[in-house]
Image (cartoon, rainbow, N blue to C red; front, side, top):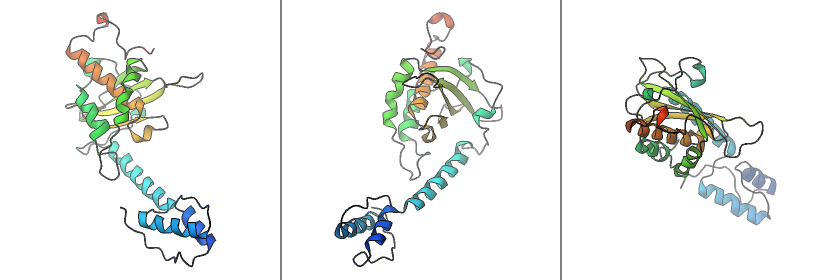
Length: 234
């Protein structure tokens, strides 16, 4: 249960406008008679619900903090934003770090880096995004080493929306990986859910990386070995 908030309001004697302002400020309905409003207001205090303005400030603070950490490696190296790297991208899969299904699961489900409360991300629903990759929604996968002094690299791709419509562009997706371990440090997408760093499009790119690593280890990445799903969109 969240900490109770210190409120200088006597709900039993407060007027209806005051009760409604209190509830509205915390995103609760303001319908019902005064008895219902009093009960609802006391319930809000019991639940420890904060005003929406406070929640927005906390969200902005967490967003700004994550924005700094996602472009700084665990070693403290500053990273350029992927869209700032105009040259140096390559489609040579031999340059890609080795990426396993374990790393995919660790990032989407177990990672705690993107949550404000230190809990696991638990984006297990995104594990189903493999169908995006299997149906060839992922294409134009490219690698950028940033520079030889940086321990991490970028991989980006285009991802076709689940429901393509005329005039709707493919999503721009990227992820930042350790060059040595393949561990995901951060990710992004320009879809509506992209700020969470674990949308279906990010997950689809990770499945592409897992498949690329598997095929590379089996010697199946040559153009003569069959169709590679990451090379051409459906």
